[in-house]
Image (cartoon, rainbow, N blue to C red; front, side, top):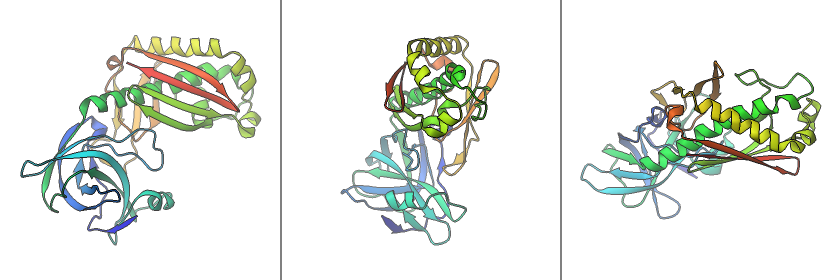
Length: 292
């Protein structure tokens, strides 16, 4: 799906710093594919779903016009706008662009119900704060469980050569993950161990045979980390949707780091508990993480 617009820059976003409300100037509004309305603002607190790695669902909320009309935000998408021509590309067309340079800018598309606000109008945007908190909780817990999984899986690598995470453990999460899905206070991560990882020395059969002990080790690590709550940062902020942001948290006396485009809680003290379970599947495992 394509539109012609006057948009030339990436959307300035507030979600990385935890904003759940803000305002923005309407740059584009048009009828969408399902009787809805698509709106782009120069700035927004709303987190959109990514078409490249759609693990975190989009924020929902309301857009309030200058006249006080409340328009429901039912979804938020990532689109690509051409910095030279203003052409806006959505959905599969945007995905087909692949990795882009300075020519294409990532923008937040608010999907709303009701009439489109006027271009140039400043609107207020409020996202569902409770839903955001629960999704942020799930996303932070997913990162922590990934680092704990890497630590528990360390002894199942028989060769050196796998990439290391920032805590110094072989990065099973990065090497093997094929899909991730977040929901409120939960995540599901699917890992596959094919010929490449087996050649790198990961012993899946032994790992699966030891799953009860692995799960116990992961949950023990998580309890230990949560007992010494530290701050979590996502930098840089402020930033645009295009900006590559780094998630950081002190764990085991080192800075755990992971690039991430989602939202997170501000501190480990915001998490009461994390529980992980793992089940084997053909050629890999699925990890379920629950947080509260």
